[in-house]
Amino acid sequence: MPQEWNDLAQTIPYRLAPSMAKDHPNLPVEKEEGCYYYGVDGKTYLDFTSGIAVTNVGHRHPKIVAAIQEEAGRFTHGPIGVIQYESILQLANELAEIMPGDLDCFFFGNSGTEAVEGALKLARHVTKRPYVISFNGCFHGRTLGSLSVSTSKAKYRKYQPAQGMAYQIPYYATGDTEEQAIAKLEDSFASLFAHQVSPDEVAAVIIEPVLGEGGYIVPPASWLQRIRTICDEHGMLLIFDEVQTGFGRTGEWFAAHTFGVVPDIMAIAKGIASGLPLSATVANHKLMQQWPLGSHATTFGGNPIACAAARATIAVIKEEQLLDNAKQVGAYAKQRLNAMQEKWPQIGAVRGIGMMFGIEIVDPKTGEKDGDTAAKILDLALEEGVLFYFCGNAGEVLRMIPPLTVTKAEIDEGLAKLDRAFT
Ligand code: PLP
Image 1 (cartoon, rainbow, N blue to C red):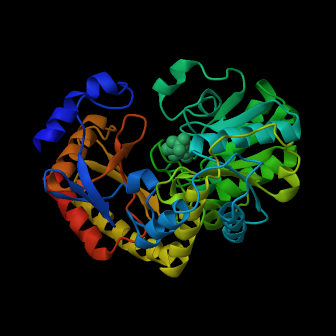
Image 2 (image 1 turned 30 degrees about the vertical axis):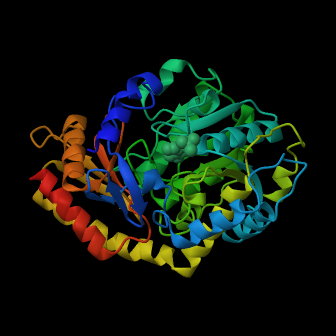
């Protein structure tokens, strides 16, 4: 590593909060482009994380860079409600065209967490009901409100988030048949309503349509559809947290399209602006108009440069037919991963849809989930030159989320490196 980097790395323990960085940088990079990071060590690293489902069109796509430069040449920021930029209005129109069902009205924020906070607030305001139901293992953010509906990791709960706001029920369990899953779901709601909370006090049910941080679990469409009808039966709003699944990850614009379920409110972020901070709480016009002016606001939300990047991102996904690529190259990647599972007993399961996969690592002797081995494989894969990220309660799942632009050759390259890590 160059001397300047070594010198700089010495300041990390003093200058960055421990919760923000280890005492050494994991992978110091000097450039990123397409599907690759270029390390200061001179090595090239294939990126199978997409910055955690953010850079869906690849790093520094020329059209995104051009859009950012052009907008930054004219604007950076103005006070919301006073200054109006063309980019935010155009973006809202373009987003409305790709959203599921009648979701056509947007409150722009800066992060996934903020979009979720907005969704919870909107649901409680509109229904005048206090409670929310969420699913075990789901992750919705780290602020106290969003944490109160998040249970993906026990350690997050130690901050005692908004207590008494949320009730949890189990997520779809892998291995259950559709009938079993739906029966369990109905029982969970029935038991909750019988013993803990009356449905007419529940504002909303919030769910990740594909479980992300909690371990990449894909439920059957019928299970999600049944949640939709249960919500309708009780006047509860359905919130989809599509922060991770949005913008092509599932092979469609949103998981809502994939599963044929239209929620009342959606939270979107991550892939929306290819790395610039932007998110949105989305609902239909009728619902959103009940949120009074000024009762919820943000300083930076809908920043013109981020909006320009988002418009370019949507255009690139369309022009390069990346939803099709996610489906086709994704199916190829799944096949290759299944073949690896045959070869390596440490791979207990391969789950996923579109271009999002979880490789669950187990102890071959006991079949137990094995977070320690997963961490080792992650490090070894990095040494080989391919980046994965972890998820699951014990970090036992290797998450593989390449850019939607990824080619079969890049999948082959990355999986050959992963294979060497297993070796
Ligand atoms: N919701 C989901 C499903 C996520 O995966 C995340 C982040 O990983 C969030 C919310 C929080 O988003 P952010 O980190 O942008 O606040």
